Image 1 (cartoon, rainbow, N blue to C red):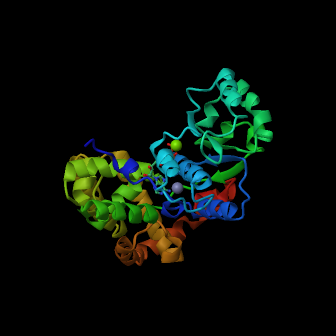
Image 2: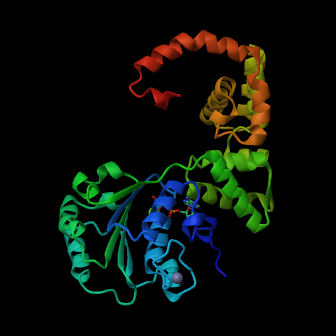
Image 3: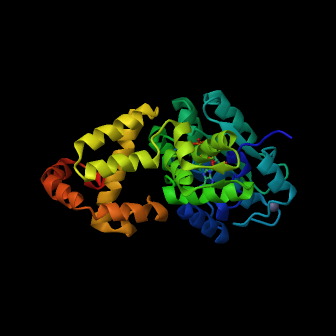
Length: 348
Ligand SMILES: Nc1ncnc2c1ncn2[C@@H]1O[C@H](COP(=O)(O)OP(=O)(O)OP(=O)(O)O)[C@@H](O)[C@H]1O
Ligand SMILES: [Mg+2]
Ligand SMILES: [Zn+2]
């Protein structure tokens, strides 16, 4: 049988399975339960955080034979067809390649007719920001007052490119970047289902490299499993990705905290000799120093991005006297850049 990549194999099929987007899942569930479902939605957020997945789940929720329900059965013919992408009444359109006025007109001509089998006709337009200005304008009237059996779901990674006239006609849902710890838990679950073991460092690396995108995490995991087999080890994963392993990072960090310049240079030299990407190494070092300062100042509760196993080691380090010294030494420059910043909260 053909191999199915993790990102597809583990696509959530119900709102409950969607991780890190509880605000979206709860609002949609409540709207369905109260029979207050809007006729047009705009799903926005970065790549791989669940927009298309949620659009399909919503299509099932509205059309399931046992629905409308926030928990579609995934067993009836309609649910199965929507999952397989072959339902006649649920159209998934790629906005990038169907972006002309004619494409929108053709779509609109079919909308007044009743659905062939389902309760609603659902039009999912992915990458909607790629539509031309004319195509957006052609949508305006239908979007304002669509036939009662039609629902639109627009998905985009670049909501600012969607005209405000379209945005104001849609209920907007902002999909968030998924926190590292949440990605790590999901990755752990996927590995568990696959019977693959991995140490905490390996999982933390995957979660960090994914930068908040679940698809990126699962795609990376596929690649690592192909490389590392049934047991993933942090140092191997780091080497495979061309980034410095945790041990190298902590060697450099210890040298910095103990003020030993020669040891810092030796640690950097050894890291670069192992083939790690220097840009990435500096980023990791700065990120870890930032984590230490936050741990020191605000404690574990403020550090949702730090896993509990990593935190024990980091917490020990955060007690180092030098951190307090560097904090007070740089506080003046921090405060002035904070004041200069237009959006101070972003700088934390
Ligand atoms: N919130 C999530 N919970 C669990 N898995 C997720 C989530 N978001 C994404 N995934 C995983 O990533 C895959 C791709 O997700 P999806 O197609 O929904 O992303 P998207 O937001 O539409 O991305 P793009 O903007 O690139 O189209 C899913 O099949 C699933 O495996
Ligand atoms: Mg998508
Ligand atoms: Zn069903």
